[in-house]
Length: 78
Image (cartoon, rainbow, N blue to C red; front, side, top):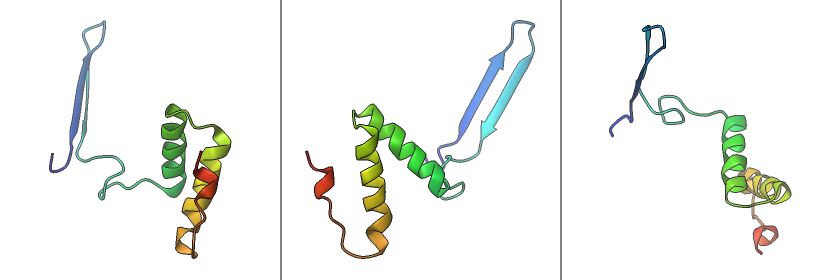
């Protein structure tokens, strides 16, 4: 759990073995996601939760403005 490493090994039909290791969590401090990747992940998660695309876009606009001053979250209620 200190790094959330990953490892997968697959044996193909012909007997060949493919193996891949991941030394740390994708999206963690060692391998952060870009802003575009974060927004895509957010949109996918809220879509899975039942949000329509326009609500997700509204939320992203609100989140983007957090550094600019007061945020009106009322469009996200309901």
